[in-house]
Length: 293
Length: 135
Image (tube, rainbow over all chains, first blue to last red; front, side, top):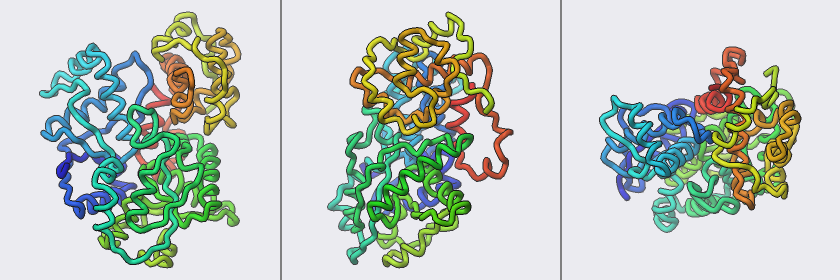
């Protein structure tokens, strides 16, 4: 378990650089070696539900070909969309060998084939769960911390069942990890409710409505911050809050951080790699107040 | 987006293709409404998910044709995982979108989005939106 291939995906190198840097730091701290895939391309998010057009599966299968070429059968993703797309594409192709034949035939310049059963795509939450709460506790700075963190799962980590990282309706993997690093996890009923994903592009009113419901639910349950593990959830909850706040001074904001940002701070890995300028709602005041910064 | 009609003048061939694209027929649905109850965006939909499935069952494509339902769907899979009959409602929405998109009518035109807003978006939002709303 101590060495994995790593697939970043598009956003982890740019807007979600905080997620990548802190996740890699936490993995290193836990003794896990990650090797980024060579020449990776877009995973093809989101997973297409059309059964009859295999072109939609080419991008994720190509990513799995890269993973095969890495020589490591376990592939770590940080982004929920990448995780969902890659795992579902592998299952889809595996279910009917004619699909694999057609896709591999199309990618005739690739030297490696992929049938969908060669690579185990894992999300960082899976890996943290494997590391275990006891070990995470050992790796954490033990000074007290009363930061109340509302972990937000979103959709794609939990649905559909065959790829879910945890129980679909009652997950607790993030809560356990947060407790292990000495934060106070907060239950709120909107933690696995959709943020509206890609609607932020052209139907932002829907995203605003979802963001309000999710943030208000977390605030009602006395959260200090929301923890996410998806770059799109992060944007929809963070950036869209700032836009609403710019129009409505009465709107109460709640900072949004990646789970690994909090873990890195609690594990004494410092704030060095963290770029708080990437946030829209500034988390520094609450982090300072609670002694994490 | 000026035209949200799901299945404007759906041809018989397009109607038949819904089963092939989604990999299912919809006769298992018994209208319990679980999907609509859990749908995070149903308030923005003309027809909630379970009514859209009912239209598909009965072949009432006229009503479905003027509904924005598949374009409001966020593909969160909440409906499909909660359906007690195993109907993939999210898959039905994808099939409805595909029938329209395969007429080469894209439902998202990126150059109509404000440039500053587009530049600020995470790439995966733009990729996801183009995957769902363009061919």
